[in-house]
Image 1: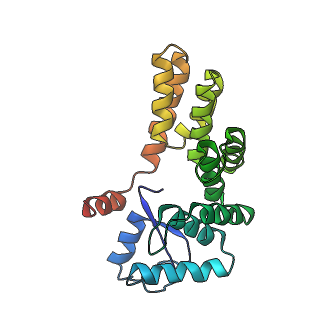
Image 2 (image 1 turned 45 degrees about the vertical axis):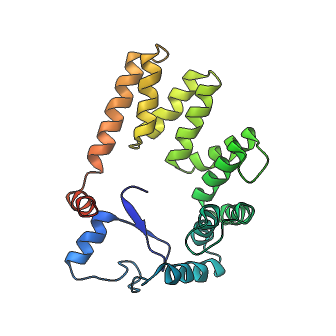
Image 3 (image 1 turned 120 degrees about the horizontal axis):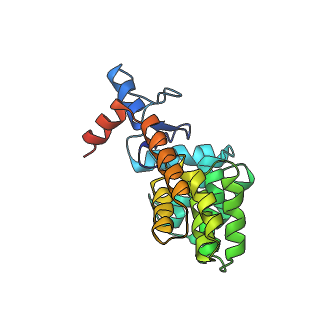
Length: 210
């Protein structure tokens, strides 16, 4: 989604780049969801997100957490504040915030390193369909030498079209730690997912973006 969609600061929804292009072709030059005009600057966009965050929108709060973590746009980097915002967003239902918390705790960024806690956050997110969290769980299992579990995790996310997960299974297979049948299943599932997600408008939008 991060590669092929953008978020609407007005309503915090994500829209496929191809769908956005298709809407523009039909004369829609504002948000396809709520019809709010696009912000003119980063400052305007930030103001929109902050307004949503004040209404306890979990995705807006998570977005602010990511902005504080990166120090962008127009915000001074503050990892501690980012952790607070991710925690609040996760409590309000943001799956992405669960992933972000998992990343911070697993790697000890802004918090004391606690890999078990990081895995717990990723597990909660993966159970709700977060693909990158499922991949991270596979990576963690592989590092611990539990290759069967790693394959099971990555198989799920590969079938959802995650390239990193498919490549992980491929490496495990090449190392002789996964069966030919598992590799074939992952390959077919990944290819089917990629084929299903193909979009002429999305390809055109990506070409226009360079």
